[in-house]
Image (cartoon, rainbow, N blue to C red):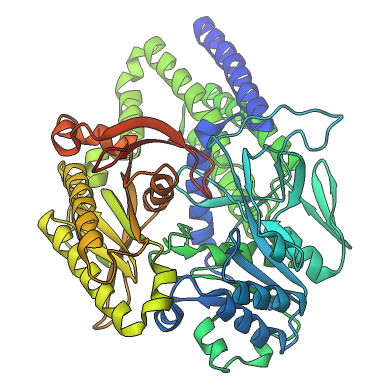
Length: 619
């Protein structure tokens, strides 16, 4: 009995210290190791509560597949200008372009777009580039901006457009799965501070300037609690299309309903398949980025954003101490059905409170109390087994039960059903992107018939190499293509096949461009990017017409590696992850034409990537 009393006392002390430590780290946002679990539990709560109808505040004008097919992609700025004019005529409250307009284009198009932006209150996008995916900051009570990370580079709109519209930063804060969890309301670059895209739009729509305190944002009469670093926690109303969405093609055709525009915030952005600007959410594995921005705008204007501020985190920290103490006290009180029933009741009350609070817009941590409670309780149970051998069978059964309810192993998780693409799944794959450089300007000069001939030849070349190496073209739009290796099932050779395909494409394209009668005297080039990792594979569409696609951070990085190749004068940029996956085959496939690795910043992504550069002829 004395030994058991000592065990209970020591266990309570350990539980208090452990819970206090986790709670302290949680208050200082130092529990990144728990955030992935918390993200999954937040998604589960969202799915349990189901979808909701957003307030009638925002409408999306989508540059979708139909618009791209009819007008090309990206849209010419003269077409963007016409799109704005059609919208402006119906008196929207604000028009927001979730499109980066960094570079100058043709004079006529730029002039028309700048003039259209001046005709209506408008906001255009900027983006920050961060060298690391996780940013460390040091709080400073004398500096309210100290908890906001500083971007290494800001991708700002062309000055011509910046003079015609307000600027907002479109960066989002995602978890390890790529799901947007927060909107940083303020972004810092070298020598400048900018509002986020959603905040800039919301403040313009409400006709008020935002005011910040260390724990909240004030927009007129609305006080919106914020998390550390002036971040807005983000939850979603539902899947793609929950916020009213209209095709830009219908707008350009004069089919826009005035009721969908008048007095509303209009957000223009891309939903093109394979465009890369998509995110997984609890309701949709491929939610377009423009709908993420629109969700944040709606939350800010309506004031219904979920709350996860210092007060919520303080309650979490208190619970991380109280809950393990209560559970251990109940176990130490008596080992009987009464005690276990009391523990079950405590767990039920906590789960019910957590879910109900989430439904009312308060995000209390679920992972933290579990992490604070489970280890001390398991330790206490194990020590009781050691002290009380007469009940060893009972405790062994409990331990076995705990092991059975843990997450299954990785091998079982990766097992695939033959019809797995009927629903989006995550799997390992290798991705190759190829794109012609300078083709847009050429297409205006040689006419549509020649353009069709060249693009047909280009598609045939890419298709030949994709088929020869076991890849599948999942997206082909004009002068660019995406090739996926890993369908219908991922294999150990996907990285090798993708690399071989990328090198073959470079060799074929180099000769094709040099000898094609319409291209050999033109300044047309190409760029190729290749990467491997986890993707979301899905089957889009219904009925007789469906399309297989893959999305996620791996796809985004592979696409952006083409920019790295072009910027560094190479034909092919391969991620270090892909080269590592190739293994001993690297020398055979890539020869002595490989240089690197170099660290490259990826546009729209906080973490830089190690990249190898390949050139088919001497640099």
